[in-house]
Image 1: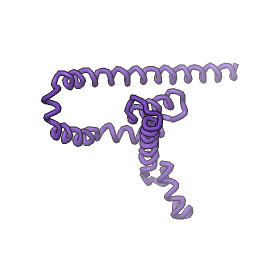
Image 2: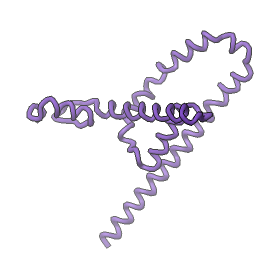
Image 3: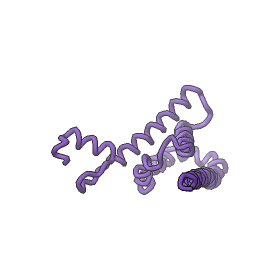
Image 4: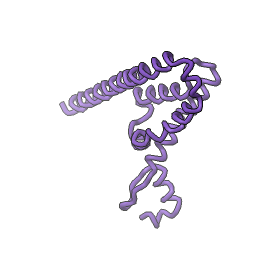
Length: 156
């Protein structure tokens, strides 16, 4: 079937994430990565363009979370790429560690402020992430219950 569709069909199946005749495609990963990158870029553009006090990458995450909460973005679209990045997150911290070593004098000059940020930052991020995901899970449950009620009303 893939041969009949030609190279354009094969490329399309990779981009869309379709699985054809046992071929494992990376389309879901590519699509998810592009979506994550687009939200990152949008957040950076908004931060620069509007001179907002929040970091652009955080704005991008908030926009992505909003899209997921309201159903504008489907979880399946970003799930594969997100899982990959979470599994390999340690690699993303290597530049931070190298940067921290480069600015050791700043760390030595302001240890209390930096230690406070390091101790309070991760729990706050975990709390905010958990709160957002709980809201998202509640929305999914409500939508599922509403769908079941509508199907029940149709069959009654």
